[in-house]
Image 1 (cartoon, one colour):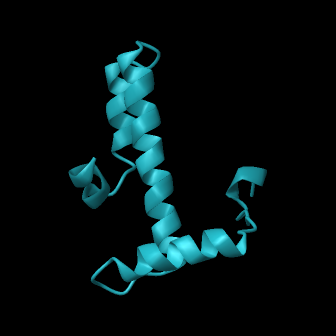
Image 2: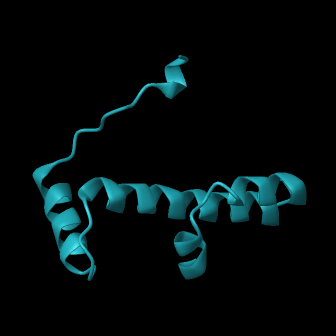
Length: 78
């Protein structure tokens, strides 16, 4: 197992946890804080990929290969 395969943990401030709770209550189906954070990371990843692709720093093949890692429900809203 490489270092990148191990889970990482982040410490959230009470204010950040409170914001996650607001987000959690705005979603109709039951969702965990982890699922919210996962979705936010995936969304940010897509934005970063699109920015790099638009700047010519990522080719179309790599762009599409990277997007294949993202769940469809994220791609549908971005």
